[in-house]
Length: 582
Image (cartoon, rainbow, N blue to C red; front, side, top):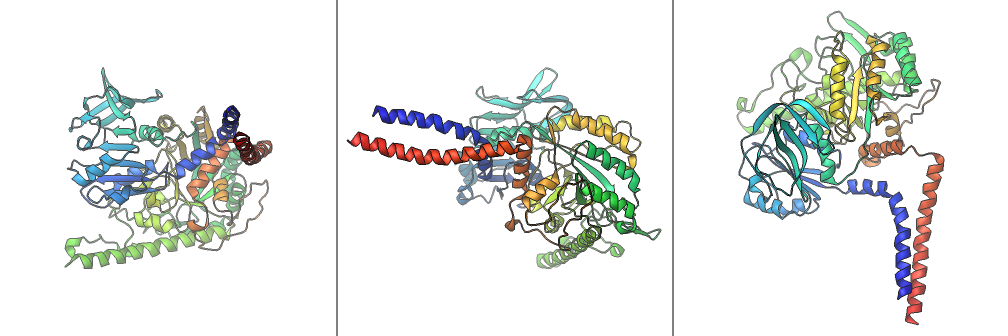
């Protein structure tokens, strides 16, 4: 028997080495296995901007997220759930069956906002919120933001065994904002916008037990590149970024249009600019379609909301020359007629968006430029619009609109995210804004946003720049990014190549080699490729590790070692068993 004990000890020691080497791989697999159920309270049964705001945060950790209204939860909803969230958006009496199901769940539970006292939790809160102005928010890593306004539910009595993950301090008073006891978590607010969003994004790593690298990703976007720009000025910026070895985004409007002056310029009309753009595509620039003309109605390019009717604050349901306010249900005899009316308007919007996207892609492909991401002008787009766009692009850039009732209800995610409402598109957020023309405080505001984003261990420091401002202010912006101690630039072309190996392949070169063009209007079928979010995580992990060929060879040897070790172990144990029997 002593022989077997010794063999088991040796086996344990040998197994430790490959397991440590494979820790990152195991972590990725654990992330893939996360299934989140969000039970929410609201006045309507449908998902609204509050749930979408929460999903932006959760979708950084998993693509498997299901929402159920508190009155519609069943036992089967919990069958595959690994993580349960209760979002108390409004004050309500939770149905007793839902309370039982939540209380019976043994996995990690996160409760947010109202109604926590109805659940079997450790915390008692005052149901009336307090509003703290110019307070300081901090987390367990002593990262903090000062002079912030926060709305929260104060605790009546704090549990001595709880751990405070995020706290708010005002004068001499300290208030827990997010707490943990065992595998139960509670966020004492309903407001998930900034500054709470940054602290929540970081604290969710504890909830999901996922330890992402403490490295901020960086993304720079050159904004509003249209046919009237001067190629020589843009070339100076492109050369600077190439010499700095910084990958970047190029947000392009392929057609400049001014209906009032009858001006219309296409990229193909500006050959010098096209040469520069092709140089950029081959030297670090990933192209983003920023609409077809970036205008609507009689507005010139840059001033309009191409995919949103700003005048009536509604989706594009009517032609530009036939603008009218969308009707409400009270204008119809019954709900059936109203639903048919909405369906017809949504069909118009769908065809309108498809036509603009196809025209925009065709204009770019005509000059051998290939967009791999989309950015809505002024970030304004309906939920149906996101569904349409997802047929053409795997990546979405910027902020997202959360409501179809008001374009101003929009926000960014502090991290890369893949929410269901983007229908498979991975969101690369814009988080630190931009340098405004003739605004001396712009850089200071950007610094403040960088500080906010740096609260999150793997937050994305992402901003944009208008090239007409020249190179000098761009160097100042880049300098602010590079001041961060841990930062890595995101190369979207590399992520695209990994996610879609059968589509157009981008290779960086010093010349303007032409690439093979995809078919005009080519669409993306997520079932035929790996998840864009999965590829993003894999490529960014590879960039963090920066494997050399020698490293890759070493890992291959370790995998072979692990296989041989398993075979050898079987032989040894078989022999030992035979000796003991004798």
